[in-house]
Amino acid sequence: MKIGLIQSVIGAGGGYDKVLFSLLEKLSATNHTVTIYTLGKPLVEIPNKFKVEVFLPLRIPFFGIYQTFLDSKLVKRAENEDVIINLTTNMLASNKNQKTIFLYKNFSLPDDKNVTSKYNRGFWKLYYQPYKIILNILKNKLDNKNTKIFGSSKFVAEKMTRILNCPVKILYPPVETELFKNNDVKSGIISVSRFAREKNLEFMISVLNDIDDNSKIIGSIMSKNNIYLKLLQNLAKSKNIKLLVNKTRDELISHIKKSKIYFHTSNETFGISVVEAMAAGCIPIVPDTSGHKETVPFDELRYKINNYDEARLKLKLASEGKFDHYMPKIKSHAETFDKNVFQSKILKEIEN
Image (tube, rainbow, N blue to C red; front, side):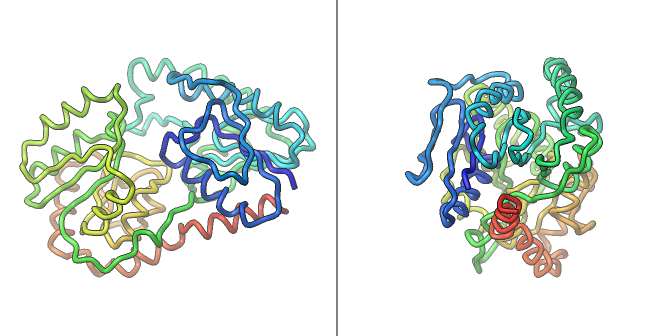
């Protein structure tokens, strides 16, 4: 079978890359012919077994959600594939006989109730308005029986079903749980996040300032967010708080394995870092919203978003060991999101 994978940008990090490379790992063990279609040259190495078709010689760094509409060119190039798997695009194949699978890790669906979404404020709110119109056009074209759409969580799937008015299944992203398993002595609080305003890190630091425990926030950063990073550094009054920037994957895993508590403060469509921390044996303390209700299905471990007193209390209780009895269930639940589960399900969808 000839399979085309479409991803606008490869190598920028995050969930999209994790899904792509997990797919490639599984497909490398099959006899399928796989071609990857992307807008610009991948920023990371692609295994030689796979052919890569590049549309542009450079990457456009702005207007992210609108870049996906350039993918119509990629869909056109992939018109002779038996199956197209869209990881980042909203574009449908012109040939209705061509099987199309939409894998949406993050469908860019702002919610008026999502207080941490950047799309609810200022420029970004205006920026998103044309995208809503495009989604309305798309939903009128999704009646093709050869098209399947997957959301990264029940939270996302239900939202997509309402907006697109068509069936959306759930396919949780792949998590490499094996990398995080350990028996290390654990202490302190950790969080993993991009250093960006929508991650609600000011609130995180306001809480951690009043917690008598060592805390680490590990994150990547783009140059445009350097001013925001300086703001966070100035807000971190406690000597117990460390902001660790652009650490390697191995360093990140090591820090998570040694930590007792994982603290998160923003809404997530899924939250891969939360599950990774759970696999490592961390107690997750997360908002009682969005995809967190699925990744952390333990009411005591969730707090009302931006509720300082509740978040601080739950971190204190976790530090004192009051939630340690959840640990077997936490580790077991993390296993349900293991990459092998994802790989098995997506291959079945491709081949059926």
